[in-house]
Image 1 (cartoon, rainbow, N blue to C red):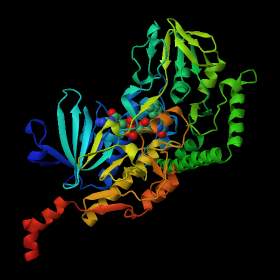
Image 2 (image 1 turned 180 degrees about the vertical axis):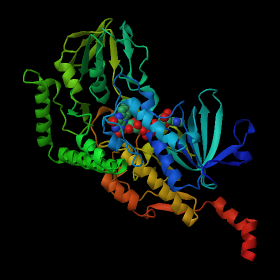
Image 3 (image 1 turned 180 degrees about the horizontal axis):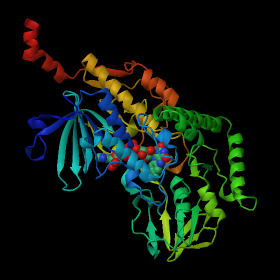
Image 4 (image 1 turned 30 degrees about the vertical axis):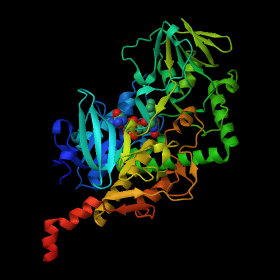
Length: 521
Ligand SMILES: Cc1cc2nc3c(=O)[nH]c(=O)nc-3n(C[C@H](O)[C@H](O)[C@H](O)COP(=O)(O)OP(=O)(O)OC[C@H]3O[C@@H](n4cnc5c(N)ncnc54)[C@H](O)[C@@H]3O)c2cc1C
């Protein structure tokens, strides 16, 4: 096997629609975003003898960075940690715009030949595991023709992100149908939307709202309408230490140094926020007051009711949001919506906001595994009923891993470690000649929430996410250094993961003629 071609196995019981042959791959990946492209790179490098394929429901590489097109779309973590470990980020800005991130992901796919292993417009709907055969049967729907396509694989790696691509989250606001202007959800930004000279209200105060508000600088005025404030901190979009190092050291070395610098700084700040919340709170408020001046009502609009890092912190590059407010192009209103009206919004305080365009930056609908229905030996399995194993597999679900990044640091840091660990598992299985790997749930492990954040979307998401356990390997550390120790250097055979051979393989071994003659010899 060369990693380029798949084995075609004509098995009548696995036939695709219309009796077509079912393609078999050693590994099927679902999703061609940062996680899928990164995992493919690891597979190519570390398991070069495996066949693999990426199934992607959309028409393009990039996932999040291709889907989101709202004004100002950008990362809110630095690209030295949101970039892949194996491909230095060379652009000038550390906080990068969406199109640059998309170009980086696509370039990675193209220069490594990963793009040739992607089948687009194939939305995976079902995956059924057979323990007897030690394989998944994966059913996808072609989004262009509606035809069903089937594959089999020995391992399924889900890189389908964490939210529903088909719909965003939208609370049930009263009177929405009365509004005569345009209502826009950032997940589906209309390319032709002309907001020049218009009055805009952006509902929300999360990462998306704080990005859109200063970016819509052609509007007559933009109001950020929030129910309650979020912690917002400004950071330069360029990293001066990175620039200094990059001017003097080879690109790859400088990248690794800056990556570690940023990982450690982020961890330090997160730990400080958790251990000394009052100190961090005071510091962040000082910074905000410095930005906004003494006349601004920081208490009302920029002082959250929760401690820093109990929800994801909002980063604004080069003070752009604060500057837009200072310049009078934007303002913050802290209030609640009573109802939409024909001309805008009526608020609970009795105030009214006139608007031509209302942007509902109200968040994502969290979804795990791209809504794929899983069965194991005919039994339905849902992630919410399981414990997460090392943040990348589910208890008692064999040969399936998933990529889920950090909530307190860049997503890709964990996605990279997960992909590396998957390769270690696959290579271990090949060495030991086993074909089933399954983390077995142990008694006496307490269940804890997957994410320890108070944000509304996290609270909504807990219903679909697995739990974490109170002890390793079921515990999530949200800490790159600890995960690196566990996933890069820890033993794959850790006593929790069971490695076995399927009955089919055992039967094949007994009757295989080649083996019989070998035994006779
Ligand atoms: C606006 C925005 C900004 C963000 N900024 C940051 C940031 O600065 N830092 C950070 O760490 N994180 C950020 N995130 C989180 C971000 O999603 C991750 O950083 C990262 O892009 C996730 O990559 P992924 O490949 O795991 O998932 P995605 O980018 O979501 O890609 C998943 C892919 O899987 C495909 N897919 C899903 N289901 C199926 C299915 N059933 N069948 C076939 N294909 C399927 C999708 O079409 C998509 O292409 C941001 C998220 C958003 C929405």
